[in-house]
Amino acid sequence: MCGIVGYIGDEQAAPILLNGLTKLEYRGYDSAGVAVYDGAEIRMEKVSGRLARLKELTDGGLTLPGTIGIGHTRWATHGSPSDTNAHPHFNSDRSIIVVHNGIIENYSALKQDLIRRGYEFVSETDTEVLAHLLDRYYRKYKSPLEALTRVMQKVEGSYALGILFKDFPGQIFSARKDSPLIVGQSPEGNFIASDVPAILQYTRDVFYMNNEEIAVLSRNEIKFYNVDEELLEKTAVRIDWDINAAEKGGYEHFFLKEVYEQPKAIRDTISPRIHENEIVIEELGMTDEEICRVGKIMIVACGSAYHTGVMAKYIFEGLARVPVEVDLASEYRYRDPIFDRNTLVIIVSQSGETADSLAALRESGANGQKVLGIVNVVGSSIAREADNVMYTWAGPEISVATTKAYSAQLAAFYLLALKFGLARGAMSRDSYQALLDDLKRLPEQMEAILKDRQQIQRFANRYLAADHIFFIGRGIDYAISLEGSLKLKEISYIHSEAYAAGELKHGTISLIEEGTLVVAISTQESLYPKTVSNIEEVKTRGAFVMALTSEDNRDIEKVSDFTVYIPKTNRYFAGSLAILPLQLFAYYVSLGRGLDVDKPRNLAKSVTVE
Ligand code: G6P
Image (tube, rainbow, N blue to C red; front, side, top):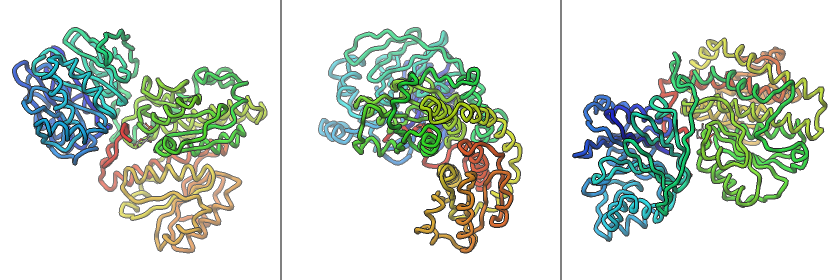
């Protein structure tokens, strides 16, 4: 993971770099550093811990003169998050300096070779290899561009790089392979960054870098090359995001703000695709005949995006009668999946940069599969490499633990399942119409749930010291349990597990003791009596039960200790309502425990390493 930025222009670079890094902290936040060149000396400051420490140390960047610089916020892969391992990394005579996002997979062999040649290493990172390797080739070929292309040919793995050469005070060198990188252009200066929000305040004109491309930035010019040093023509894209969308807007945390943005995220995802009561998904790129020919859907993703896939399986199979397989991208890519021409592969990703999901996409493409991406970040790698991309219009999501992107992904699946259901004759037009009406009502129902968050806060405050919390449910309620449990453990650090309610008795029930909190989700009418029986089973063994059910199931109070009601909707969409109290519960437990809700320990938002 990690985030990189670079700036060359008229202004003092360090405050701009620090500002950019603030927007990239979601990519990693265990250490940070900047290097600034004033034409005489390259000055570097780096420190373990949060970016705030680096800001303090440099008085917001003011202590570092110079109008050219690079910066980095780290999520450690090789070497602990120490001051020394923080980026940037110098070569030995401090004439070349590098920031890097990615992993150099053959760094160990390269390092041994460089040590044999007399190079001395100070850090444990894979990145330092790049600084010394650049040094080696620069000494040999005397050209920074040549040195960079030689390094690119030598290293295996992924990288987005920002590099300064002391001999070239007016230039930033940059390259990418399998880690995101954009280049920004403005009359006042030029930029590199791992992601758009880092530079949005300064420019909206952005070039997306492709794999194995190089950018050389000077004050008034940006040149692009391939690894053969041939000049490339690239066109800038104009970013039209609302800049406020990446700010907290009065909320204490991005997490809470994004929870409250979910009704809008769903509206924005479904509304443009409903025309006169008909779902139109042009970007799907499939005719109804092609939809009918689909023999199987394979959904591949990581984390919460994977959980939307688990939910989508119930929905597609129920509404469109098409078999669905769901797999974790990190498993799928190495399990030699069986491909056939009638399988539609769907890769789901908020960031569009998750390394395992991207690899799964490439694996599918190489085997001739048609791939649909459900992606939130416009122009991201998965969006660009999928055959077709259906965007979730959740807007920029900053909090590391996802909420609104998850909800928008579910909405995308609802649209697809309804479209498939009608096209394949699995549902009548009347049912389609009724479901579409329910879908359109969802944002309003979500707003109603979000109006009252105090009761959840009060309840959450009783569980700040819990050691274990269990989530149970059946069918779609099981899919929601998975996400509710993940949210809780991500941001509260309380151990929590989700179980299919009927499976509890096959082992997990032995963990239930006096006072264990069990969150029981029961929104599926046909499964309601079954889940109630499972609640009784845990209650008998001392569990304290929080039930989450539809508002007409008041009799659940006979078996539950605390109940949260959600409005009635179609059973297929109930998950979108049930997840809201669970997100709020996780939020208030995290808040009550005094944790960093938006940036939980050890995690990162965009996981661009395997
Ligand atoms: C990380 C994030 C999760 C996210 C997962 C997949 O682990 O912390 O919130 O669900 O990556 O990310 P993606 O960007 O592919 O949806």
